[in-house]
Figure 1 (cartoon, helix red, strand yellow):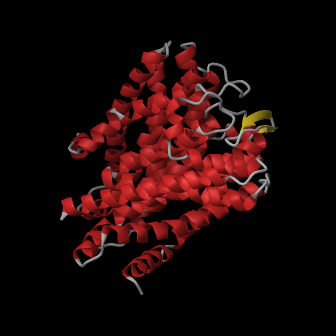
Figure 2 (cartoon, chains in turn cyan, yellow; figure 1 turned 120 degrees about the vertical axis):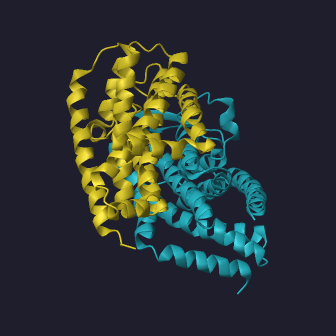
Figure 3 (cartoon, chains in turn green, yellow; figure 1 turned 180 degrees about the vertical axis):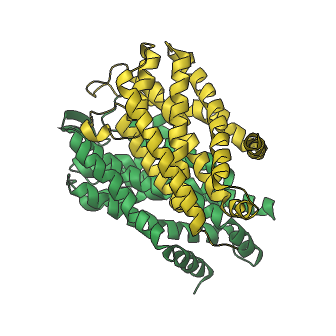
Length: 245
Length: 238
């Protein structure tokens, strides 16, 4: 097995050894989305998709469709932050014995991808009870993309800040970004909303949920943001490991 | 007296880290301002008059409450083994819990003052003392929630996830963004939010919401005490 594969397998084994944690990965996103599918009223709203058209729908459809990527992103961000912090000592040793920072980031990202996929499927399944997106497959892709972008952001934040600040930033950041800035109900979003990490995944999710077209450009842009964040994560983790040793 | 000396030690440990000062002084104002700016673009929601003001008011309450929740959570998680040793040395669990609560109360009070000052820059606060009192109630409420979660789920990732998801749900349900009906009324911050809104807007005490808030406070205190003492019973003696 390659060094990266070994790091992924060991990380996954450590997570699976904690059944409560695995249960939370499934339960929490499903719970968050599930509560919103129940409580949000069916008020009529008009939303503007990034691909162009205006759609008349209800709050009861829009809010669960926004909450699913938010739940996956929130879980991905917190997991990214705390996994990086909890594995930082082991990672420094792995760098000493010949691992490259890039291999470690890829290994951690692979582990976070699995966690993000589980959280996304749970969140989308809970949403599906109340609302059926136009393209379920692309909606899941957009949700996983949101989870990965926030997981990578969590890795960067985890390498730069302590856990208190990090968790605070991820909670407020994800809520303000995905639920407020990128919410399709909102009009005249602030200028900064165009540059937040949740923009492209949520555009893709809304296009997949309410539009007729495949959200290829939004997904491609989201992958570009993810690639940029991975580069930053490699640099930040290498720098923090070097300065600590 | 010993309780205050212990609390002083905990606070000294807390303020020695510059990042913590940043967390208390800089991050809540940033969250409040961003929250208000973000809600300015929500004109469509029924019943959401003056969305920017609603955003800043909600952001203020939530920013300090969640900070207290996090401090409570990590105080319990990071000091678990140390507390067990102190119990073996003769400290009572109630005294240890008292120092945890007093130190998070002090940190929360400073953050509340900063947050209220931030709010006051953009919104006229009709009764600042009353609004500050409500913020204190909110930090005690969330501090107790953090202590409870940290006692039941002593691993960082598990505890953080539960607290963050609970806080996110509470924030959305109690924020007046949507009419969430009877479910929203059970959100822990629903009644403090109404009290805070009333203190800021009219300067009056919203009496209807005081009793439920106190009931939540007592309920959370009982649950936190039970969880903290039971966690000590379950913890392995090393």
